[in-house]
Image (tube, rainbow, N blue to C red; front, side, top):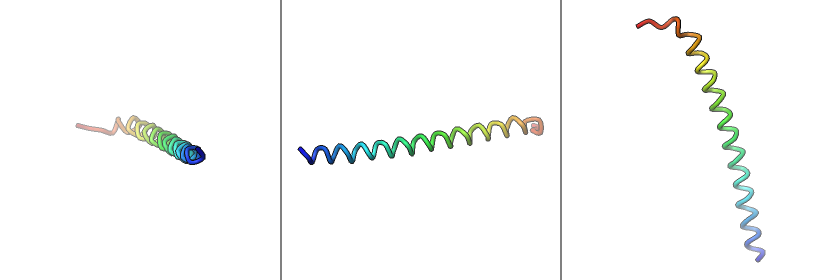
Length: 49
């Protein structure tokens, strides 16, 4: 029975770590997307076809 609890503890810790990594990655990508979009909007008047 103790082996099951150790396994569950390891899986729970791994899930928390992956959740934190996913959260940080999502926030970073969101910020980069907003900055990139703002730069495109700012420079759109300089675009000529």
